[in-house]
Length: 133
Image (cartoon, rainbow, N blue to C red; front, side, top):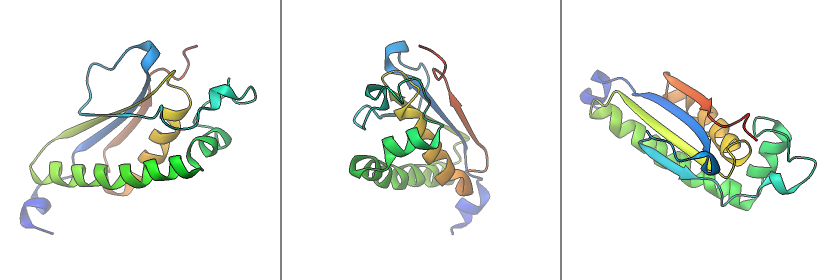
């Protein structure tokens, strides 16, 4: 690890989810769109559930598209955190959106936060539209 990387702590990392139908977020350094992933909304038994529930998250992520999405996203975000820390950046805000903000974006954000926790000690996770219809 370089001396510069040791001198600068990892930036604070805020991850939040949103629903495109409720409006785009005003502040985000990075924005990712999870609408390409399988949508639990179209299954009656999952429609009123949340992406924080294991069965819903599995529906979104435990398939070729979901696995590939995370496989590509994680290294990119890790790289950005590392470079931001080395340059002295204090914070990074990541927004993840889907249609309503309660299924796909939430499942992705929860998985992303869990994977990044070891390298982002100042990580916060919030779901802006989780309880909106």
